Structure formats: C-alpha cells, structure tokens
Length: 306
Image (cartoon, rainbow, N blue to C red):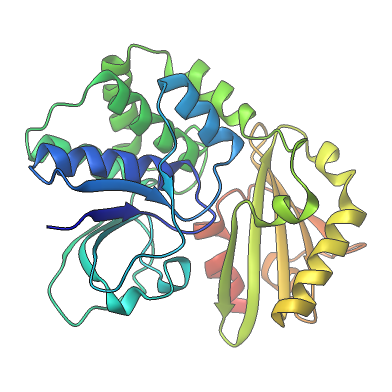
C-alpha cells in the first residue's frame, strides 16, 4: 500500500497546516500508518508560532503527487487551490468548511459544515470515533480555530467553534484568550517578507462572475504600519495584474484589534469595490468598517455586485 498524502490549499494558513497534521494523526489512529502530512506552500509567521509552541516540525513541502496515489484534502474543496493533476489521483476523504467546487466520478468520504474552521469539524470527528485528543493535538486544533475566527470576532465564527475552543483549552491547559492574541499578533509581523511574498501570503484566485480576480489578505495590529508600504504594494499588485491578466486585485489589510479592513484595489474592475461597499476609493484605497472575513463579507458581496 502506498502513502496517503494529506494536505490543504496553496498559500496555506494555520487551519490548512494544522488540519493536515491533525488529520494525519486521525488516520494513523484508525490504522492508516502510511498517512503523511504535507503542505503546498510556505509556512506563515502565525503558523510558525503555533508549531514552535507545540514543538513539532512543519509538514513536508510538495508540489504534486504521482498519478494514482491516494490523497486526503483538508480546508478546501476548490481544485484551483490544489495539485495540478488532481483528476489523476484517488481522493479518499475531504474535510472542509468552504464552498463546494470539487466533483469526483466516484464516491468519497465528504464532511463539510458551515463552521468557522476545519478543526471544529475535526474535533467532532475525533469525538465521534472515540479517538483521544492529547495536549498537542488540542493546542493545534484550538490554534486553528482562533486563527480562522480571529479569536471569535469574525462573522464566520459559530457557537460550535467557541464551544470547541473552550473544551480544547482544558485539554491543552492554556488560557486561550491570552495565547490566541499572542498567536494572532505573531502572524502580523511582515518585516522579513518581500512585497511579492506579502501579496501572496494569503491570496486566493477568485472569478467574480466573469471578472478574473485575486483577493489577498494580511492581518495586522496597525493598519498605518502596513500602509507605509502602499506604493510598493501597488507596484507589486500591478505587476501581478499584468502577468496574470487580472481584472481586479483586492488587497485587504485586516485590523485584528478593531475588526476593520483597509482595502487597496487595482485593476479595471476596481469600481466594484465602491459599488459593493458604498465607499469611494481615494488613491485606490478605502476603509471597510467591520469587514474581516473574506469568505463571508467579501467574496459573496463582490460577486453579487460584479
């Protein structure tokens, strides 16, 4: 029997990386000793903080999987965010909390719920299968939930997410509020990244009706600090617009303390931002009050107004 490669989306965030690790542990507990955690991109600062705290290595970095191999997908159901030869591998399972954009020609274990984080679903699966959650796994799980829900401030957060974190924090033996804020702040350090890396850290290619777009997002504790790089960011965005033939590049600078986002929007369809949010772009930017979730507060409203 060959390996079972377990991974999430490209430009992985904490949920994607943690889910690959936690699902691998889950599979091994079920007897699949050939399960291996993988990733399709670089680790960000927040995820690095979590892995260092727990004391484990990052999953193996891969670009693709050989035809015919078995995979498990976590934290995405979007083929554009996965390996290029997806149609030539065997998908064993999918566990996700996003829009369903993936089809198979064969039955597959599929678990998706409208919760704030994949790890909330994994927490349920561990309990349903009576698999013990140890201290490290509990810390990983609650870290991912805090990350995806911005410590419960995101509109994607549900009571199920909150309940899971509170239960997991007992196992992990930590104060989730203090730990969570330290973790989120660690993820806002952009000092070691190039402009290109900042624009790609958490970028998703999304087609808004017929508009080819990229919506990227970074978290910060100070929007003005990131806006000091505005001219360099715009140069990088324009380069990517030209290279990828984009109609819109939307860059969200999300304030994790005050729950707002400053948007920088470029491209021939940038006016959609003005229409969608009732704002005026001045020098290509505007403050989007209360907007923190790309999944709930950006993609749907931008698609509707495209």
